[in-house]
Amino acid sequence: MDDMVRAALKKWPNVPACTGWLALDARGDWYMRDDRTQAAGAFPLAKGSRTEHRQLREFIERNYEGSPDGAWFFQNGPQRQYVGLEAAPPGWRLAERPGAAPQVRSH
Image (cartoon, rainbow, N blue to C red):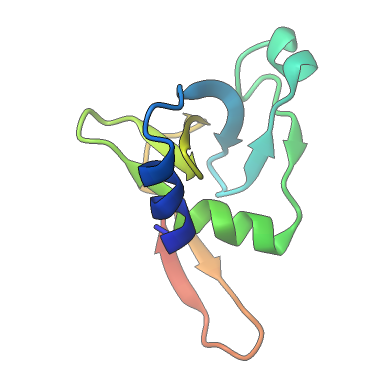
């Protein structure tokens, strides 16, 4: 988890969690799900917008964790965003960054 996310959690410890806004498909692609998409149905029937921005995907993946009760979430600063999953973890993704060796990441 990023240091700035840990700092935000300490500064604002009681921010309510949210659900429905972020999802991960079986191929390891992230989807943003706005109100209209959520109203159209559950993930993956109504997927939403695939996240194409590399830095945003990397930020999500650095701050994506599982809880002891089996829920998966993205810690977005002080707010925990529970993730809708198309398939049960683990998922694998090849993370490539310019100038760095590729890394295999689990979701």
